[in-house]
Length: 495
Image (cartoon, rainbow, N blue to C red):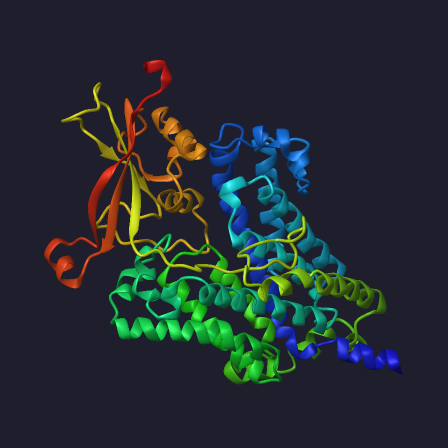
């Protein structure tokens, strides 16, 4: 009798819609992540990349980070890993492994987790983003949601809500503890213009009245510091809290490009949305989806409880994730709160946060080349165009998220840190050789595949044009030249 009562609490058939969204959407984001790596990793980090993994692996054993590449790396093996990850992710997004026993989607998601961790752990600065560990943690946790033959486990749904809580509340605390602009409500005066990679609507968002921007900040504080607590409330309050988070994240999706960070927050928020609430909002969603799914192909009453071996596996996973929650909780209450940090080698139960301070001015590093023999006065300098980062002042910023343009993001960090990064000098050398894999990562090569004689890097101040300036000039950006940050350079063999 006690076992029946425990199993009845353990099972959450009223969250079948949430499980479908979580499993299929997390798998889709893994597909995007592997696709991004397939297209960019070899040029950035491959055998002949900017930061070659084989050189990095010489000291890798001291790092103790799990990766399939710690014994051997090749671009062919990397591509195999990416293609395998995309294939597994595609089957999960289609719901095929979920048709079998719960062990099948469990193994499929753990495969994605291990394969992508192998990539992240050798990705160096190009994979040093919070959404990498977020994807890993989400993939591991969602693995224990089971299949269509078993009801969703309640403890795993609670842990996914706990993940959303850390993601949102951690980001809110980082802001309150960070720059004064978040406390005096002026942060959004600048953010839409200075964010790493603006989107098509970023300029329109920036030009909204300052009173609206102050309301945006207030709404952000409410959504990140108050609403997350209600994710643990009874229904329908928990679903309402999830709805607020989803709405605010959709606004961030519309106004910028943050890879899969916002999309993952949206997906994870569905862990708090019950079937009755989902059915009330969208009647096409079956109200008894959980009972129907759990009983598919068998007697519904027999399929309404999880088998004991599966219950044991999920319980062990739950205990593991609860124990690992100690350090993130300690970090949340600390005045020296860490942002986007992992406390274990498996990158599980991490701490998150973003934009503790907001950049007030946008400085862009522009890379130019020339075919002229002498690079001084009168030389014909031509500008390289990037896919995502601002360059051409007339070009509308594009929407790329959830796809991640890693080179463009690292370019945004250069003026905030230093342009004298190892990878950036390697990038300039690749341009001087007209390296085809590197040029494919750019939007525009001004020399059509011909190597330039010289390259240089200049800094510019960028700001969005006002409506009057746009009508007069057609420019979406107004840029002002500052200074040459890396003087004209050429390959050593030409000195």
